[in-house]
Amino acid sequence: MRELHDLNVSIAVEAAELARARRRVGVAVAASKSSLVDIVTEADREVERLVVERLRAARPDDGILGEEGTSIAGTSGLTWVIDPIDGTVNYLYDIPAYAVSIGLVEGDPDPATWQPLSGVVVNAASGERFEATRGGGATLDGRPIRVADAVPAATALVGTGFGYDAARRQRQAAIVQELIGSVRDIRRIGAAALDLANVASGRLNAYFEIGLQPWDFAAGALIVEEAGGSLHGWQGEAPGSRFLLAAHPQVAAEILELMAPLPVEGV
Ligand code: LIP
Image 1 (cartoon, helix red, strand yellow):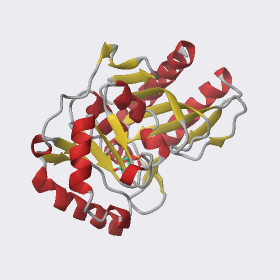
Image 2 (image 1 turned 90 degrees about the vertical axis):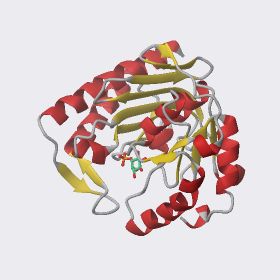
Image 3 (image 1 turned 45 degrees about the vertical axis):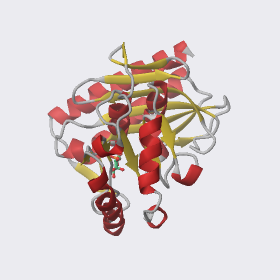
């Protein structure tokens, strides 16, 4: 396990350096995906290519799932789940909140069944490195991290996010409108991997989002759990695209209660 995790860390750090170097010389939109505002840059693709190349060389029998299209079935029973640049819109606007996120899971890259083993999230702008191994705890730049102590929801700082479809964003905003009066405040940081890292390091009391993809949270979810936090899906389901909440277990219970009457299913 140590060897696999060290491989994850070294590749994520190298990938973050590439993303940072490309950011320095300027970034352009290469294409849009699910909507006009769901953009991909050439750097997203280049960073994914680098990560895949390194993994294929070191671990030819493993599977790989990447946001920018990589989908390789493995024979080893292990799968790497990659978001080459999470927070791509921040990256385009040079807002220093974008990250390389690499998770290693046992089983298929399906959040309902996978067993996360190793997770690394590197903020490519600041260089901060969040990491965890199953049962090994979570660290930031090598120092142990823990979720913040439990607080009442009324004083909880809550992160969230919005999708690339305008109508969906309006439905997501309606959920936030219902919740915002019952918590300290809302933060929209723009990168799920960093939102999860912020929960794990006590910079947020909670984070929830509807509509995430497996690569957005494959690494960050393990980092939250290993920092003493809990992950929740909607109405007892596994955390996933339909709904994901991360927080200290007590804070999560209160926020789930607050959100129970809200039209989350329809988002
Ligand atoms: C982003 C997520 C973020 C979400 C954005 C987008 P991307 O991922 O990290 O939480 O709100 O809509 O999905 O597209 O930058 O990799």
